[in-house]
Length: 285
Image (cartoon, rainbow, N blue to C red; front, side, top):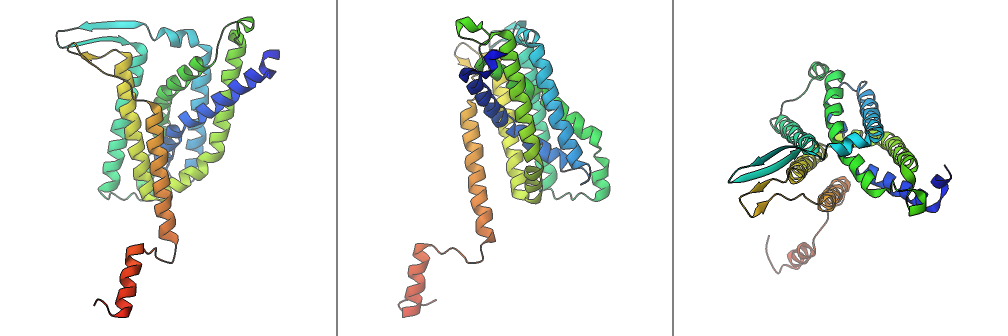
C-alpha cells in the first residue's frame, strides 16, 4: 500500500483517470442518445445503471486480466490467395462492437431525419431493460479498449524494478476506473440534457459514434492482421485524430449555437462597406 502514495503512483492514477474519462466520452454520448428515447423519469436511472455497468465490467476484467490478455491468442488462421488473417478473441469482440455501433448510429440518424416523431406512448415502448441491454453490449467493447489501454500504461513489474507490482498496479487501475465513473456520473445528466435539447448536437453525436464504429472496425481488422493480397494490410486509426475531429466539431457547433442566441446579427467586413456605399448613394439597392 505504501507504493500507492508515491509520486509515481499518484501520477499514474491521475493520468489513468484522465484517460478513462476521455475514453468514456463515446460511452456518455451513446448513453445520452439511448436514454433520450425513454420517458423523462426513466432517463436518470438508465444513465446510472449504464455507468455502473461500465464500472463493473472494467473491474471484473481487471481481476481477470490474464484471461483478457489471453484473448490476444490466435483462434483461427485464414490463408487464401487474396486474403489472410489471424483472428483472435479480442479482434472478434472489437470488430463486432464496431458493427453494432455502426448499425445503431445509422438507424438512429435514419429515424431522426425521416421525421418520425416519438410520442410519450412511443417512448414507453422503448423499455428501460432494452436500453440497458444495448448499453451493456457496447460497454463490453468499451471496457476491453479501456482496460488494455490501462494495462499498457501501468507497469506490473516488482517495485524494485521500477514498477508497482501486480497488486499495486491493479489497485491503481481500479481506483482510476471508480474515480472516472463517479466524475462521469456527475456530468452525464447535464450532458444528456444538452444533447437531447439540441437536434444538431444529437446528429453530431451520432456522427461521432459512426466514426468510433469505423475506428473499432479498423482496430479489430488490424488486431486480426487482415491482409489483402501481398501488400495491402489494414491498419488501426489513431484515436488522437478521432478525438481532435470530435472536439473541433463540437467547438464549431458551440459557436453556431452562441451566434443563434445573440440578438445582434454579425456583420462581415465586406457587408459593412456595402452598407456605407448604399448610404452614400454610390450604389443602388
